[in-house]
Image (tube, rainbow, N blue to C red; front, side):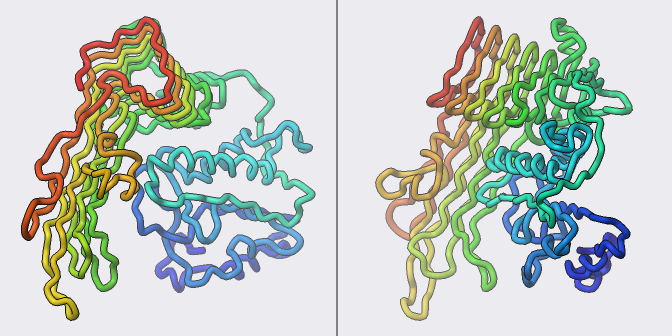
Length: 512
């Protein structure tokens, strides 16, 4: 452990053994104790996709793992330790949750959500064991739901663990009023108690109602993880709907994210508007150095989805009487390939541009949302551009002398015979890395229903390929000229194996 006002980590730290001595019950004057830790001991060299998540802790890798920090904090007879992850894992925090992921679910549990009526301690008490049973699956589910969005190619397992010296008896942690009032509550945004929409969501429980007075609410990343309803004051009045606005102008990320745990959450009578964003461009390839390995291929651009609303896999929200307009998202551009300083068969290829899906709404796999009397207009998706391949080059080697290295391929190109996309680990041919679903994207195995909706004036565009590198002699590498990637589903894109129902809808004036 490191003190808050430390000057030097090496000098101002507290070892697990020293801390365990402090926790001696004779020193504490208690019969038992619990230690709760939401911090990690390792840092990541691979950056995450978004500024919405970050490692939680000082990022210091211990020189030796020892026998486990948390296990040393309990004696043979008393003590409990509830920790966010083990010593070899990174522990995460998110600005979407405004906490560490572990702390977010821990506070929910302590607030009453973890109280199990069938437990022998009955309603009104939350034990440490109940907290663990609530927090662990919550953290596991959050990490799984957000893995593709924020953690490309990173193992993000965060194993919540409980160390308990007495497994036969529960340790009551906090008393709560949970269970004494099962009636749904109403929360008004803009009050001292819930000034922002996310504040109201944090306070709400399943079944509660959140009301937005007319006005403009700025922001994005509104994370709905409970079965609640967010509504304007009069969803049936188009003038009130037009004046109840959530604007994402100047913000990154989807305006509203429905988590899998949101179940049948709903929004009603709200205008979502003005989101225009794209991820940072990918890095170029790197020939490496004496201390860093080479990565000749340009990195791939990040993909994006859900400008206005992102329905995570397995969620089933209802979207009624809403207007979703003027969202524009674009996939990240791929990096350029690099020339090698040593003998290799071929120089770096250009990275592929990222895809963009669902300018207005992205509907994830296995979701069953219902969209009623909603207008989706003026939205667009654009795929990212591919990077250029590195030119052919000649390196001088002590054994082989002058050695010619072939030029690299340009990004967003593949060939089934000698350069298949499967060899590079992509989910499909380059045509998939484009703009799909200017208004709405319905992923595989989703089954949304659209009733009396208007989907108009939306657009899709593809990015452009990179160029193949210049040769030392002969023909250039493919692609030998820049071309635009085709785009699909300007109004609505329905992926394979999706079952999409339209009842009384107008879909017109969209352009791909």
